[in-house]
Length: 443
Image (cartoon, rainbow, N blue to C red):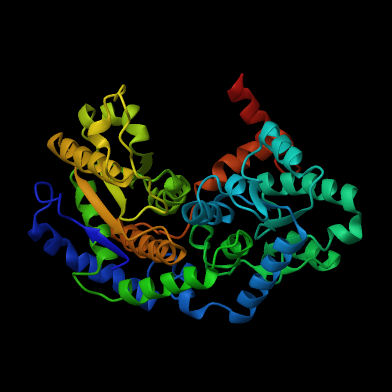
């Protein structure tokens, strides 16, 4: 199987009868999803998206990606949250963190995900003197971080190549029919792609939101979607053996036992942004009503030298979920070294992946002995097919887990709080009454 949940290290933390006891709640969550009767049911477009996606738009995405790869040295993707995390996560998982440096073709950079002038100036430096295109992603077209970056980069592009040529190099992924960005795109003649109405940002990576940048990076999006479709067929079936639901059940059993933090871990650094995508998916879906597991992440063995001490001997508030990638994208044979000055010849004569695996196995045993539950998600490799498969696995698990927590896994009302305060402090029209109140609190 491409992706599977492996509970072999859980026996001392979760009994089989506990899985049996929670299963009726899993059945109820599944029924709510399939019948679309649960909270947030107007955002369930992701459930069968890998099968029912717009084939005509998919073809236009591939054509646009081919055009970008032909006429541009750089593609700047402007978006925040789900409008950039998924695409970047897939690109780096499949092609590697350093794909811009190690592979020919168009370079992909992301902006519009912060308000740091230093970061935006770095993106500007990347673009200057190069042929670049922009993919701006925003359903409304008024997201502060994204709109600010796009405003600057659009002007840079127009200054360098003129308005007419610039309009051929801007691609807008936005609402199907309304909103500021859609209106602007139509008036300027930019190619447009759709942010689906019934798919939330954190579930949108397999829509145009993620697919255009992923395709522009040279990844086979047919393979990506096929992996997700096969995963959908498997994990949409109600069964005690459904691994996505079993993972959801395990994390909720542990949560009810006082484990309030889940650390997603991988021993492949190329998985770093997948970790970040997971944190948005689960954090934004579950963190409501003063409930929810806090999603954290580590890359091992790197973070064993920083977080390893806390995980081994700190507060027993956490469990670990390890994404075990069975086959690395590349391996390295270790030759013996004459003189053995570093004392590492005992590692020679084998592939480095074996050393990495033994580090993982040793860590699992140590942390289990330290009282930290260990969940494993086995993945064959980080090919486009398997990354697509893993994405849908997490989607299903997250939706089920949210319903097990009795929250709406598809909204994010708390995200608006900081925006309201920020707009008031910046003097945005309409927020005047709040400005004085907030400024007084800051004194």
